[in-house]
Image 1 (tube, rainbow, N blue to C red):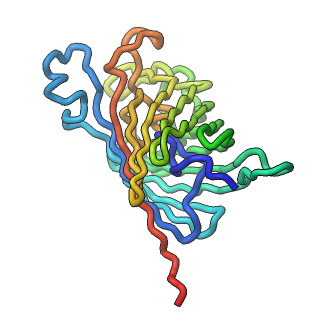
Image 2: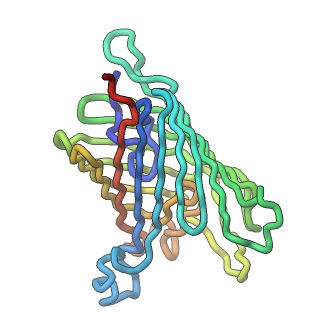
Length: 278
């Protein structure tokens, strides 16, 4: 068997890995504000490139594996939203002739917004769901890739063009080993359909970025795994990252500027709950 990735998350998205049986994992993630505001001037330096802006999305999660093939988790996703998930290990890559060439997993997440909204009379309409098929392969001791076909389902969506309840995307992620405790990671996901020109309560018209791009650096200290990353989202929940990412270029998708980029980090800590044999 091969460990394809060092963490259960690559950057923002899930990897094919789960923690081992009877292991509890705690994760905290922060997504800071824009790296450089277009008209921010000296304010950009004062806000330390978005890190000291006073704006940050925080994601706190606990997950536990009752078996080596199932992982269950709960999270506080920020802004009065909560999530729960299940991740399944279906296949595990094996070495040798005739061994399984890939690792395969499945991830399903339920997301609920508990913010009071007088326009939403049915609590069921506050729910959204994510389903991902995780297909990964470790090509060498240094390089791994993963493909993630994904669907995000909203029980209700605001009025607008192409306001489908289902948003489909296809993602690619990878890991490049640098040293025994350092790895470079990347993610790219592209929405195959998207919400466009959504009309908010105030009458504003909103569109979202169809691309999710992230680059990361993993540092394993033995007790903790630190993941530092830069990407084009400030959202902490996968629901928003893959379907409602607001950080898009001002005029067109092809116009890049640093107001659409932000820093972030994740800290992972896991502990075994197995009883020591006497």
